[in-house]
Amino acid sequence: MADATVVNGEVSDDRTVDIAGDETSSKISGLHQMIADLERENGITIKENEGYKKQIQELEASVEELSTANEDLKKQVEKAESENKRCGAARAAELEAEVSRLQHDLVSAMSDLQESTVELSDLKEGVGRAKEREKEKGVNLEAIGKERDLLLSKVEKLEGVENSLRGESDGKEREIWSLRKNVEELEGSVENSKSGEVEMLEKDH
Image (cartoon, rainbow, N blue to C red; front, side, top):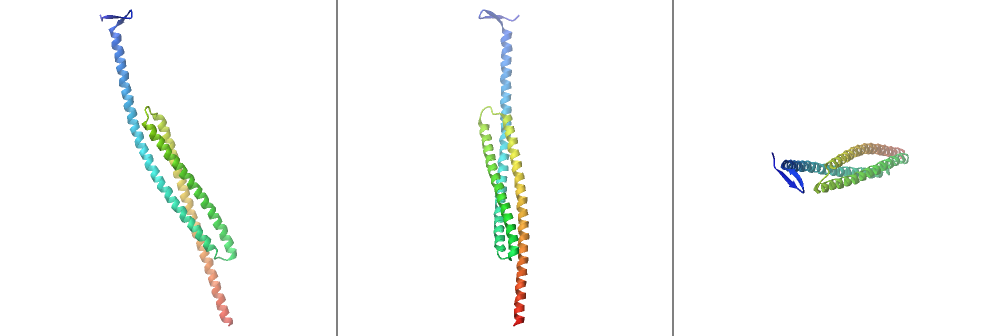
């Protein structure tokens, strides 16, 4: 039979002490396992954030490319305006309306680009905040997962906007090309008309 010990006037069995010690050891082991799991998941989160950083860099390059395309579109519009001045009165009015529409579309594209840039900045701030939270003790991994999903959703949305703007820019280039071709045809007609007038004047003399 196990020895009994009197504690504060009560009898305590040594087996009770052994059981309590085993429970404490089990809890400590469980805590160590939880810490190891958190460290492993934090490492995964760090790798995911590196992936976000790469996506942001690629998106920045796409935004820069889109800005260049918009600048080219602006130059083409200016060129169309210059060519418009050399056209006949009736055709000039039509071309001015076309140029006005292109300018409106260009303003809309620039506005969309600005919104994309703002969203990109917000996305960077979100990633920065996520990195700061990684350094804090007791990081809430479930909250980080939701934040990650939100950031990925924003990135997908921005990619959709980028593709839409690229398609719109391509459409403007085709319209301007058609406009330039019409101007060239009109100039050719004017030149032919002038040549005919000169020939008639020469015959009269």
